Amino acid sequence: MQERDTTELLLLARRGDTAAWHEIVRRYARLVWAVPRSHRLDPQDAADVCQATWLALAENLARIRRPERLGAWLVTTTRREALTVLRLRGREVPLDAWEAADTAPTPEEEALARDAGLWRAYATLTDRCREILRLAAFAPELSFSQVAEAVGIPVNSLGATRGRCLAVLRRRLAGSGVAR
Image 1 (cartoon, rainbow, N blue to C red):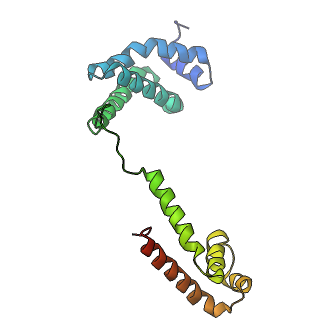
Image 2 (cartoon, helix red, strand yellow):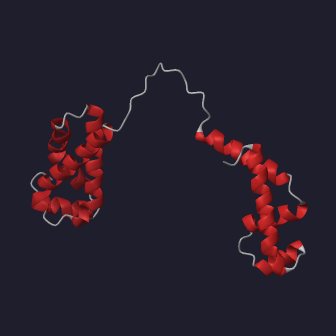
Image 3 (spheres, helix red, strand yellow):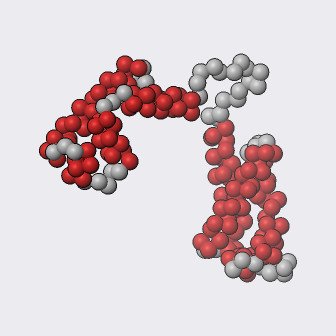
């Protein structure tokens, strides 16, 4: 493989030749590694940048127009990845591992509590309101006339009845502290 030029290696790699891919990586690995380290990234971040660069090459093998400039393409791609890591690292706020645990509910716990409150409020509605809202939520493909027929009310009063049911549900949710 060593006697092959970069153009030939890229063509073979595009066709799925793993030996060609390994030769490309072998030839350029030190170069790709040097770029994030020159940006003073720690070894873990540098490894992530290198991995992202090789992934970008794998995804763009067919788009490399000047194979003889592969080294420059890899340097540019690696530099951009390194700068992205540096920019994002500035946004990270390290947590003290010994910090007291936050006792506030997690977003998942809040969502589950709201869900439980919604179902409790729903259970207090009349049978007709529960049926109208159930059909609206779980059978949206039904037409107004089909819902009206299923519930046993005139089509022209379905919209107003549904509006009243939703208003009652909102009031009960607000009264229970579930809705804001």
